[in-house]
Image: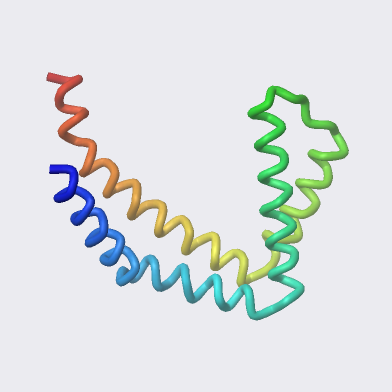
Length: 114
């Protein structure tokens, strides 16, 4: 049975890659990446987010300087059209995956509700 589910998972991954949501995300990413300065800012923003998240997960307090810097970079990022488009496309893919997750986990949910 596990093999069948792995096969279905591979088919699902292929279908995801062929979806309008995925191809839109891929195009938006490549468009954003084409501008070296924008791409560097995006990578910096991702690193800041990751660092802050790791600190929070470790139970460490975030400093005012860290929060201020994160807001500053986020403000810059939010003003760049190609990054805004990328984030919109990420939301589209996440919505698709969320709907899929709800469908897949319905049998589990029914166990606990029934």
